[in-house]
Length: 378
Ligand code: SF4
View (tube, rainbow, N blue to C red):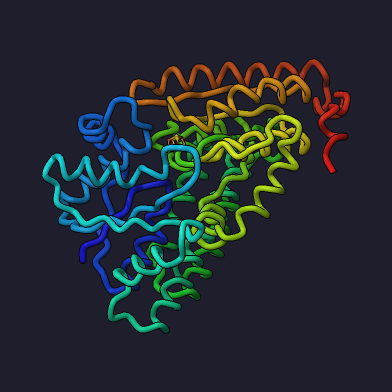
C-alpha cells in the first residue's frame, strides 16, 4: 500500500518510520502551503473546522504523488473530531478521489475496532517487527518534541535571527533519516548540541508567554503562522503543555485511563470549568491556571474559527486572567487570516507585557495577590 497521513507539525517524521516499518510505502504530502489550504477550502464545507480543510488538501496533494491509503485518527467526545475522518471520507468520495481510509479509533471506543483496523495495516508483519517499528516510532516522536522544546528556550536569546530554527530543522532531518533507535538517540544528542551551540546573548531580558489552545493549531506552524518562532524572535520564551507525544500517549495508548487524567485537569481548572467540553477546551483552562501559577507574563490562546471546545475556553479565560492579573491574547485563525494581522497583534501584546515588566521592575507574579482559586485546589 502507498500510505499517507495528514500533516501536523513534525508528525510526518515518526509516521514515515511507522508506515515504512510495517512494510508499506510512506507517501508524505508536501508541507502545508497556500495551495494545500486552497484545495481544502474548495472541497470542504465552509463551516468545517480549519484542520479538516487542511487535511483534505494534504490528502489530495499526497494522491498526486500516488498515495492510495490514508491513516487518520478517530475520536470521541462532544466536539466534531469524532466525525472528522468520516466526513473527509465522504468528501473524497464525492470528488472521485478513490483512497482507502483507515480510521484509528481510540481504545475507549472499543478495542476490537482498533485491533481490526490495525490488523489491516500489519498483515504479514511479524510481531517482533511490529514491536521494533513501534519503538522506533516512539523514539522519533519523543526526539522531535524534545528538540522543539529546547528550541523554544534558546530562540529568544539567539544573536542571529533564524539560527535556532536552522539548527532545529537540521536536527529534524537527522532524526528523520535515522533508521534505528540508537541512531535516533544519536541524532537527538547531536541535534540538541547544535541548538545549544547557537550564538546567544544570555544577558538579554526575556518575557515568558504560555501558549494554550486547540492542538492542531498549536502544532502546525503553517496554520499558526509560525507563532512560536515569531514570539521567540521577539525575545519571548514560549511555554506550552501540549505536545504530540503526550497526545498519542493519552489519546491512543492510555485512553482507557482518560478519567484519571481528566481528574487531574479538573483539579487545575476548578473553579472555572467543571466538565469535559471536547477537544482541548478543558486543557486550555487547566493549562492557563498552571502557567499562571508558574509565573508566565501572559498567555496566547489560539483556536480555529468555530472550534467549539475552544469557544467555551475562550469565554472562561477572561475570569482566569482577572484572578491572576494575567493578560490573555486570543488568536482565532481561519482561511482568511493573514500573517500581517497576526504579527501586529503579537507585537502589540509583547509590548504590553514588556511595559508591565518595566513598571513593576520585578516579575509581575511576585506583586500579585494569590487568587482565591488557588485556595480551592485540593
Ligand atoms: S477541537 Fe475544534 S477544530 Fe478540532 S475538531 Fe473539534 S471543533 Fe474542530
